[in-house]
Image (cartoon, rainbow, N blue to C red; front, side, top):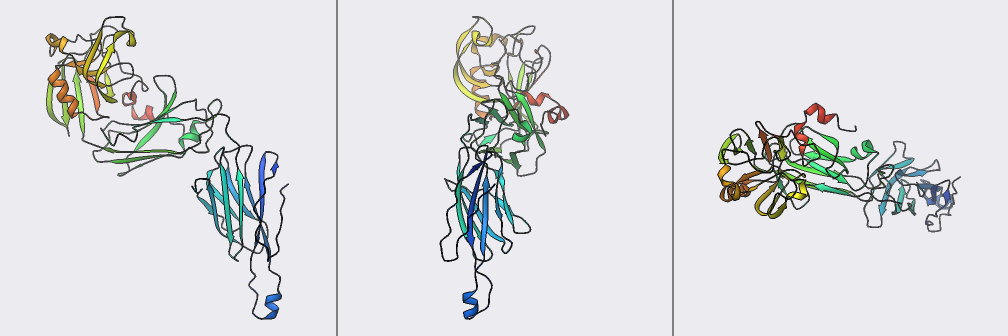
Length: 398
């Protein structure tokens, strides 16, 4: 049962009080409003109506909308503000009858809120409530991050979760993607290469050059489900699609060709992975994940024993499992004639330097020809481009 106190018109409105009832924090505040009486002594003596407002939020359990309700029949809500300690407001809407207000977002866990409400008659009240702290917090890693502004035409939006996500549909419906040209795309749930839950948004086809993309992940107050915990903040990122370019790797011709707007820019002789085993290259489409420069590559990290341990220049990562395009001067005798690497696309130092300078994060590398070991899983880098559009849409939780 909710408690309610009323004030005489001459007193200032009381602050709301917390009262835990069956897991619910019920807050009652009194409003006073001037009546619309006439002028003169009679009007001055007329008793002004008292208006009670209940401010209700969940304390024992977050993740529900905040509601404000009038309990007297002689006024309507005019304005309601609900804000957290940092001043961030919850958007909301007053009901058609003016009797209630409901937030569009859910109350976040471990958060204190301040509420102010006014009525059409001039009444005003304020209150506070707090939600219980979460027992477990889920966090995310978003790609591309804020440091990457321009991307290639195959770059998806990707979110990897620290903890499992059981409520996939609830999470997905709070992920808002906007594009400057109404690009058709879909979210798809997959397992990241390290086994964590991941959801990516990819367009039906490669992005159009110049497209501006924003992601607003409105996760604050969303429960990720059993074993996952609560999200306690929102996330966002943005990107612009750069040049329309594709790297076409031909395992039969032993070449890597950079195309831009469908036209060949330059063809480079290369040597890809040795066919017939784990040293074969991945086929299908991989996406340039990062330009890592000079790095130490060791065969034991990718399950190939002790066959190599080298410092490698102009390294461009294509999969989590260790497929790169890079400089491989030790393989010079094989460029253009034999696939003889441990799975990577190797080129001369000069050619690798040129491609490194031209390539953008998010550029697709389309590998065709004989001798590959199949296509990488969707979570092995950004392998979702190897799925048909229908198969990708089927991975959405909505």
